[in-house]
Amino acid sequence: MDWINVILQGILVGGLYAMFAAGLSLIFGVMRLVNIAHGDLIVLAAYVALVTTQTLGIGPLTALIVVVPVMALIGYALQWFVLNRTLGDDLLPPLLVTFGLSVIIQNGLLTLFTADSVKLQAGDIEVATIRLTDGIYVGVLPLLQFAVAVAVIAGLQFIFYRTALGRAFRATADNPEVAQLMGLDNRRVFALAMALSLAVVAIAGVFLAVRANFDPSQGPARLIFGFEAVIIGGLGSLWGTLAGGLILGLAQAIGAHLNPGWQILAGHIAFLVVLAVRPQGLFPKVRT
Amino acid sequence: MSTAMSAAKSVRQNVRVVFGDRSSHIGLALCALIVVALAAAPLWGGRDDLQLLSEMFAYVALASLWNLLAGYAGLVSVGQQAYVGLGAYLLFAFAILAGISPLWAIPLAGIVAGVVAIPVAGLVFRLRGHYFAIGTWIVAEVFRLTASQISVLGGGSGTSLPASMVIAIAPTRQLRDFVEYWIALALVIAILTAIVLLLRSRYGLALKAIRDSEIAARCSGIDVTRTKLLVYIVTACGTAMVGALIFLQKLRISPDAAFSVNDWTAFVIFITVIGGIGRIEGPIVGTIVFFLLRQTLADLGTLYLMMLGLVAILIMLAAPKGIWGLVVARFGFSVFPLERKVVFEELSPARE
Image (cartoon, rainbow over all chains, first blue to last red; front, side):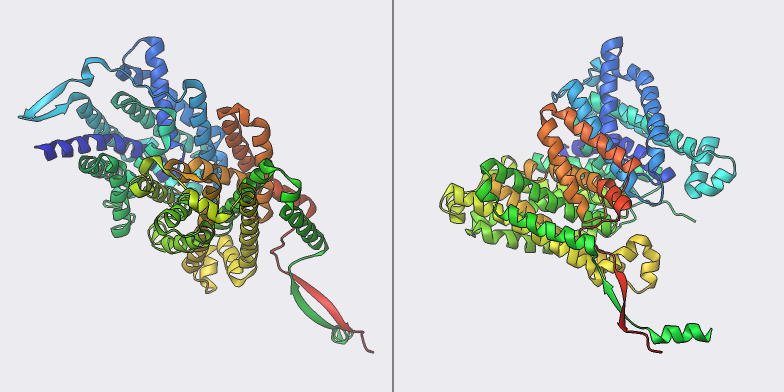
């Protein structure tokens, strides 16, 4: 019974990790950029949600109506004014610029909100549970979070393969020069991709903030979790990303159950094992 | 046409390949003077000066090693704190568990770290480009979390170097300061010399070829993976020795301090980028700028770190070769020239 609970918790938390990973995977797929500030942007979204709930007096889930467009706008501007200048054959500029960005966001949040950890209050939904059988209960909030994660991945999958925007993403990813010849403005496509990535980040940030305490220093760890989920799941596959998130969540839950000090370590070790045994990830997208 | 040929025949030339020119000889002589002045620092400086200089030496060494890794071998790591912490923990482990003198523990830590780097490279080399960067970070996190599980070394809260070990370095506090200062100076000179020699060797040539075009380098018969592996191991070894020395001077260690991504990677990257990545002089110039900024602005706290990040971003966007890159572009001057120059010497006067 104990173990079933552990596995259930691991899977449900894995949905959150999949959301961290989806945004990361999206922009890597479109423009070969790994955003080192990704985790700090998640924490930034959490603070935007905090300010929104406090000033407007609304619940965290309602606040998504504000946080998602705000983060998407930040993403668009960030790509348009800064990151587009770094793209090219050399991989150092985007890496160092996003690294600098990470330090700026972290210390900016520290200046504005101090190092004290805070949490978003979602009200009754936080403690509501559903009884499955004797001794096995599932929280409504983790379940909702997992459902949202699946919906986000499905939504991204739809945008990528069923819409004109997705076609533009895929065309630019496959061959930027030819895409430009076909009338696409690469800079705009990249900016839209970053906006979409940060919209996902916004959702992830809000759920992070409702689930547990957060503080400005948590960004790098979220980046690492997202990155591990991407690699475990396999590069370029959105559903793989979900699987990667679940496996990471499971590994951490099992580690934590064995010894509280092993939670994060167990996740890292699962990642390293996958890297050693199957470096292309579990469900790599087959490229023709 | 025949006159041209005879003219060419009549001048016998000898071809030599050299590295330096007059300006670099002057620069090198100046460097030697500076080193002598620095070695004599215990005569002219106080305790605070020695500590500040030691810290600067450590950052020059760390930044030079990161520069070798990222600027020359294209291995952009954000996880070099793994080896700073590993070296530091090895020093404490050797001292506490085996009673080995800290002075011997420094080179020993370097060797062990070099060995550890081999299987680590086996894993992280599977990731390319940006993914390699984050992969190295995860390895550093694994090291940090593992260190916090080792209870003989204090677990998560860390431990201090035993007093008997501290006294073993030198009997008095003043003498200890001097010894540690000289070790720091010797280590940074040794690391800089090793990097210059490595880059001037055929491995250096191979690295430049790989940097320009990996495919072309492979076609010319360069074993790309082996060359990168060599650089990775050498860097791990040097970084661990510097880490051991840094924490020998601190006398106290904890997982969060030893494996700090801010202290041992963010600052090191900013130093290298500001000074000039891909140049030997870059990390030295960057360290001087970094410490000038720190001495004047450190009171600003988080604002200072934000400014540092901003400066690094602006430099990367506006002058990606850093301050020293601007100097070279403007004056064509280099203290540690790595480019080979061909010199034609006339051996005998033209005979008619």
